[in-house]
Image (tube, rainbow, N blue to C red; front, top):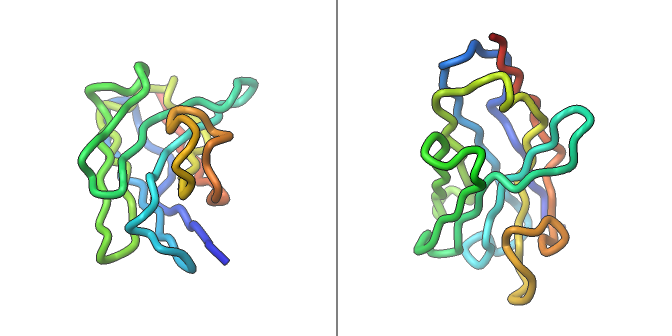
Length: 125
């Protein structure tokens, strides 16, 4: 059974940085494309970014491009989301997800096979 556990969320002020971690167990982490999504109150789930299995390709949503950085450590079965220059619009529950299948777009939540429980990030103005 594949399990994803996010950590690192919290309450920060605008302009601050925060790093989220997502530890994966029970699967072959090195084969997964990993993604980060978020859901703000009253809004649909939004693509934040993704990283391919070998870290050869990274993609970011327009709202976070230039501020957020995704990385992964295959030896630790962990993916990270470094969030810089946070603003109140970044307030959301952040989810990591693992995509094991070869089909489906990495930008679409339904393409992912496994999900974490989410971690709350709140940015005050």
